[in-house]
Image (cartoon, rainbow, N blue to C red; front, side, top):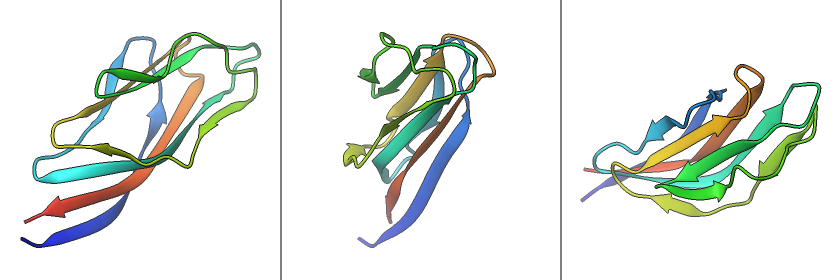
Length: 106
């Protein structure tokens, strides 16, 4: 079996409903190396990031206005078909950026 490796980035704007941000493809493992969530609102807002249904960043504490919550360095392996999900307290004002390495086995 041969493996190939690629740098992967998932980014966008969080919605107010818990939504899939990515799914690890078949025959692959995604190793999350870090993520950040920014708040461009004028007041503190909550956000949530889940890996495989586990709340890594729970929907509990505000990210201050105009600030970023950064989680790195990480080393979280996500196997085939595992989801990364996220949500925010307000629509259109909270960006996410999740990065890591994908290993594909052929």
